[in-house]
Image (cartoon, rainbow, N blue to C red):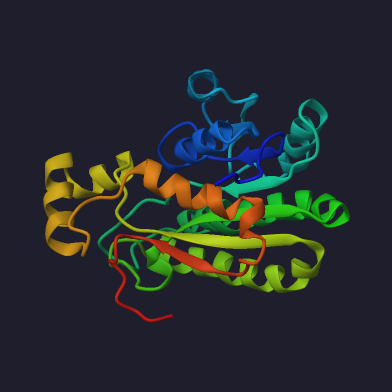
Amino acid sequence: MNLGLTGRVALVTGASKGLGRGIAAALAAEGARVAITSRSPERIEATGTEIGAALAVAHDAADLDGVDGLVGRVEDELGPVDVLVTNTGGPPPGPDALGFAREQWEQAYRTLVLFPLALVESVIPGMRERRFGRIVNVSSTAVREPIDSLMLSNAHRNATLAAFKTIARQVARDGVTLNTLLTGRIATDRILDMGGSREAAEEAAAQEVPAGRLGTVEEYAAVAAFLCSQAASYVTGAAIPVDGGLLRSLP
């Protein structure tokens, strides 16, 4: 299938590794001109070279004031942003749901809610004017079934999901879509670390995930790339699990 992404400008955040890197690589392979960001200048430059990104920029998700400058740089060097993928790393886990400091709550709110929305606010006027835009947020199955150790993620990712749904309804007539991916157990460093080891994470997935295994970053990125495509023009406001059947809930 031709996804119609050749020449499109895509901005992917949190792209030095894991899901963000995989999505950026998939978009680049489809012919998009991809700009990628992460906090580490060294890692993002190396990733840019490896995947053939058109632009690699160091940017911290906590830096809300720098969002317009980031988008401005991408548009100055590559052109107007057609595709935005908002990916931010998960906040720290903890066994006690009430054991997080106020500063941790505030940091999670900045990175999981305010940062994605600041990016959306920056790119969406141009998308509406050009009558094309694709925005995808990398989220978690925790918005449907809270995960005991991920209190901060459980709370804040739901806020962003609701915001994306609300905005999607307002801009659908302008050819702009906003969708959310609900990430299950994909073989990223975070999942392997939370599992204790690759072997333990794979064993748990074999027992608990209906597909009987961890998902791959490439499988996940393929879904994201489709949502960024011309072909996905009638899919908006959706929350789509990529989880091997893990979720039990109906909505």
